[in-house]
Length: 356
Image (cartoon, rainbow, N blue to C red; front, side, top):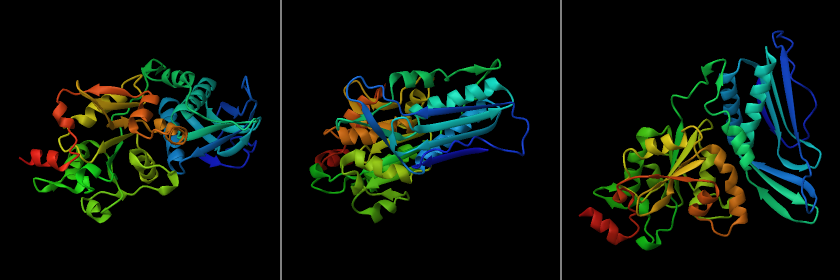
């Protein structure tokens, strides 16, 4: 029995039951509760939000990693969302195996990664009317990192030979400096700018889509899904494009690659080098491209778990630029030598100069 359940109603107390199996020597059940540990205003309740479909898929991926490390017979995660009062259960993680150590370690592994990788957004609501969106604590990150490179039974933990990466090309801007022309569709030597970006990313990713708000049919003609901004998020710019496209992406991705539509000279090794830095043992939650002369926040790769901070950031900060969100999330830079490879074609003069 391997299952994931996201629900708004209280978690029932029933445990794993599988009468058809008798080889489970140990079952471990962890219950996480909402506690009031505030030193000032008492906590009244929590509010949890999530991405339906995306959250379940991420938890299933975490369980899959646990199954690759330990011989589990059963694993179940039940997680509440919505309003949860102090003292109520917020999550239950159950694991079972033939041996108690495997059941214990797998349970701790799943819980550690739930705290850092699963896309939930948690808001603390205090009795004095105050509210606070909570990001993953450093101690939670350290707990998850202890499993990276860990060994079990004298053998190295299984490693993933291929990381599934999804890419999003940002083409939803107004193009003010381009005379309000759609930048991604402007021709460079007979091909639209967005096509150059797609060609640089496509060999190294498993899925590619475009974020656009105008001329959707023209972008679709390039051969990729096109997602406009969802007004429900109440925000514009690149963050709106990411928030709106993410629920439409495949559910089993290990990373999200983002690049703007107006960088037609991107290096061929952009995705491999960013992925190598992101997936190295103890790697950061996100990496962005940089050169000796500048950094490029609009060209980055992140783990799905980092996206848990996106909605709280949008709601708490007036600055909705990518730079601020990435900086607050612990993004690190990967330096490239060729500064020209990251040139933005923002206006007609730059496009004409590149034509020649």
